[in-house]
Image 1 (tube, rainbow, N blue to C red):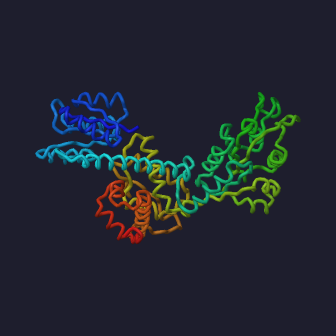
Image 2: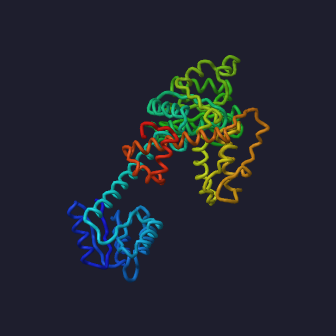
Image 3: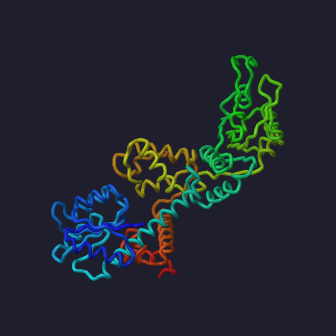
Length: 452
């Protein structure tokens, strides 16, 4: 239950406020000193509103406000003031007070303020809940993006995760194929069992076969002890075969048997091993072309290609760049103990006009470098050399076009907020931290006719 703490050295005034709140169903406690109030807040942790007198001995209401906000910035503070100290009340508002009320006040005045604050707390809680739901629905862990193409990817992941279908992920280098594979695994019924990655391009034919299927001691030069292999390690879980287009034909035959019969023999053994493994494969190659050239088995391709996911390049989802930049900025601020606050409009325009041949991986590297070398609070164009002259892609989203993108984002935020508060402009303005007049002007600017 939400509880209110009343702080007033005038005991009679404090008790009057308590009875008034009680008559409307609110639970409150009364203390007569600032010191006792701070102790109760730190010990109890149950108060969501503090109603404090402004002028008190030992510690005034301004100091109470500061200490409350230090302990818990989510507690709303209302200051009570007499006519002669209204200036101090305004100062309290600047320091984070939610509202103030002038003594003597009418009974309904206090109730209106308390109810308004509680309603705002409910709305903020709802915003946090919706934000959490959107995060779970559209990010799948570290996958970031809300573009149309990425929403389709999320939908596919949701549909296939709890099935046993094999998955083939295709996309350019750096588009996030492993992140998608992990999202599929950790949203499936196999999530409590191993996720095992194998980089098929990094190993020779003999080593790859041993890595996948294991070997017996003495089966080849250097096999000094038995090895169980990645398929057995991944039993009941998921194996992720990255760059599967590079697997030699001999290994492809053994992999096909695993897909058909769920069994294999380790190198140097004739004893079949049964496994229960889901296969997720990835490649940046055109497997159909490799099939036609005789470099990849057609029957293996059909077995792997039950569900195929095509990941878009970053240049195909440029509208996700601001969100990706924010995501990487947070990560690399923490990693490198930096406090870069954001990116300038000009620097964002530079990012939006680049080809990104290395895709998301390249963008993350650029942001990490910028965070480390940035001398101010904002990333500026000088912090992000991109060698544009080496690319053939040209998309100028700076200036007017970038403003269009930013306007679209602002318009959607306003629409979402107004829907949440049922078109109450005063509440929406507070959530958005702008004046009601500014909100009205923005509604007119974006021609949100249903809100005019």
